[in-house]
Image 1 (cartoon, rainbow, N blue to C red):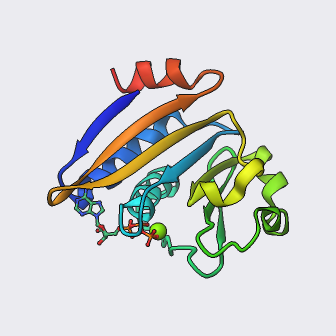
Image 2: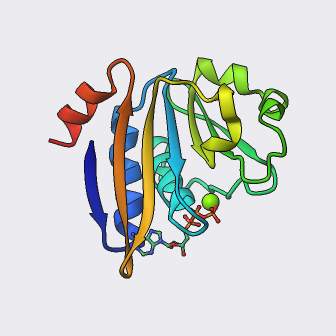
Length: 150
Ligand SMILES: Nc1ncnc2c1ncn2[C@@H]1O[C@H](COP(=O)(O)OP(=O)(O)OP(=O)(O)O)[C@@H](O)[C@H]1O
Ligand SMILES: [Mg+2]
């Protein structure tokens, strides 16, 4: 477990960029936190770092999912806030994401479909900034965090 203080929006993007460095095919990163906690900001930092900094990264609030062609594998960015039933994730191409990586805002909405092997990132408001808690779940994540977030 790691706790990081993110004083500004730039720090949240930088955390995303750090996570981009360790991202591999098959990875799932669950972004937890209330409205406005910084989930999309972190996702933007990660996606831009992976794809090039000029990349347009819209919030998938209405589309629920946005797909990007990453350098080695595709990347899916989900925002499940408006998902009505957990089973509806199947209609968003959920199973295909195993061939790439997935960033998931409002991951609890996916219910039983959320894989146990994942990195959980909990974001919360802390003063004028944010606090992030990284919790590795399953095979490999702990070691990878130890290497990158020592
Ligand atoms: N570390 C930080 N300090 C201060 N402000 C931040 C920080 N990180 C992000 N923000 C700001 O918080 C606001 C909300 O961020 P963002 O849209 O990423 O939240 P979200 O968790 O995706 O919300 P939603 O659940 O509505 O999608 C933005 O204005 C963003 O710039
Ligand atoms: Mg968002």
